[in-house]
Length: 308
Image (cartoon, rainbow, N blue to C red; front, side, top):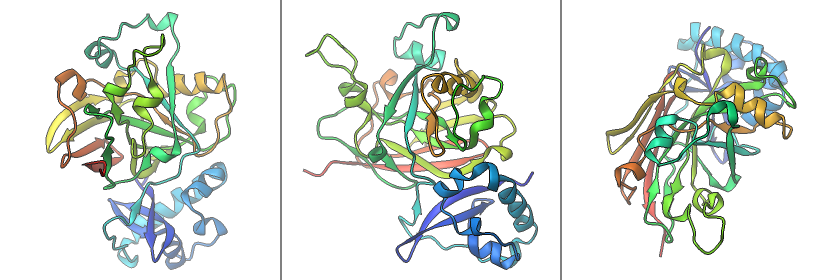
């Protein structure tokens, strides 16, 4: 199977869909035209492709295979700063907390045994979304901004009450997400409820996503991928997706037992050890984060202070 990705880019004010081969972007519709591949699906946005994923997935696989063999005939997209957009606009962000044992340990979180527990899920708003090379803004109210690399599974099929064994059938593909967290705003003492996930996790720019979406057909095993996050070139997180407590299948089955998952939903599957909180290190203006997951790519985001 030829590796490829789907990206969204901006050209002359229009958002276009790109086919990604060897990390080079090619306009999807133009590539299809060059290769004499027809169908109204070639002009669709990534979000529109997701709504028709069971229908278009094999078409995209075939186009990528043909394009890879004829890449010298295709015209690469030249990107300017800010032209690469988030690969999709999620309907909802579902995020797994404390889903790696070593991360729970470094945060001082005492977990029940897996057999006596369920995934702990919180949500982020769509306004938290930013893409590759977009800037994460440190809110004025926080002095403890932190990083969390995570594998993001993107839903491509409406799903309710799915079994664990069948759960990955609803996944269109995978991308990288960085769950930015204001640690000092995650806790509060003015209510009996001591944790405040909304206040600590939901600011604008707190969900970098990208750089592109890689179809599940290109990922042999989503639970055997190395993941690394560096800050200013120094590796902070280095683990594998195989260390999850509740794997992607189990998270999807759990979520679908409560609500209907829809195409475009993003499931952030949890972060491994190595966050800043455990080190007493927090993000500052001028820092640059690079979050990389094997077989997907690298999501890079600079950091800046909120304007006064």
